[in-house]
Amino acid sequence: MKSRKIRVLIVDDHDMLREGLTSFLRAFPDLEMVGEASSGSEAIRLCRDLKPEVVLIDLIMPEIDGVSAIQVIHQELPDIHFIALSSFNEDDLIKAALRAGATGYLLKNVSADRLAEAIRASNVGLPILSPEIAQIILQKHDSPVTPNGNRLSHREKEVLNLMITGLSNAEIGSQLNISTFTVKNHVSNILVKMNVSSRTEAVSQALQRDK
Image (cartoon, rainbow, N blue to C red; front, side, top):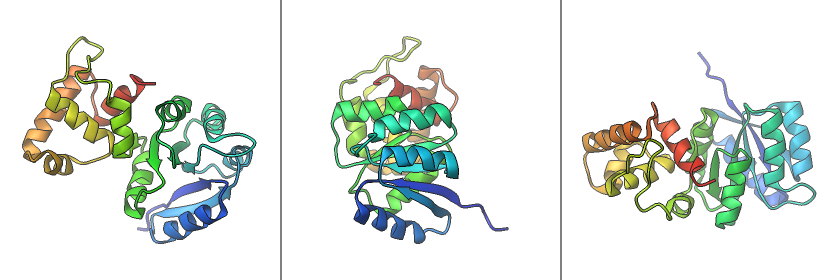
């Protein structure tokens, strides 16, 4: 049975970048580019008309900027997921995009395979950030306190940071040079301490804390 493709809209004011992303999408059979926009106002119109599932959107654009466009579309069409794709990693811009409704924030130097993974993750509502962005978001939280008063250990914070970048348990274990079993235990402890039932909720809560 043929699986349904993820419908993707590309929003960027640079023609060459849109063309490059379109070429990239063609290499992945589960992704489909349904439209492209060169401004925030055009993105709003196309989202209303085309109902994409994931939008790759630049933040610095003419007319209506990316953050404002995300906010408008997110309020009107909350089922659409947004990945901010930017050249900038300023703290204020990152937080503005996440606050507006973006589920991901990636730098434009991201690899094609990594971007494809991010689109798939975003399509199921999983927040995902470039490692550099995750570090900026959480750098002020050396020992974060969870809503129920529990404090994450240093290792648990390391695991949470890598969860935010979208790594699997095996990939986290490889990064930290620990076993997958140990990673699973850390993830379980994080979920209990944060009083959530899934990795997605844990990541969302960690990002919400910094908005």
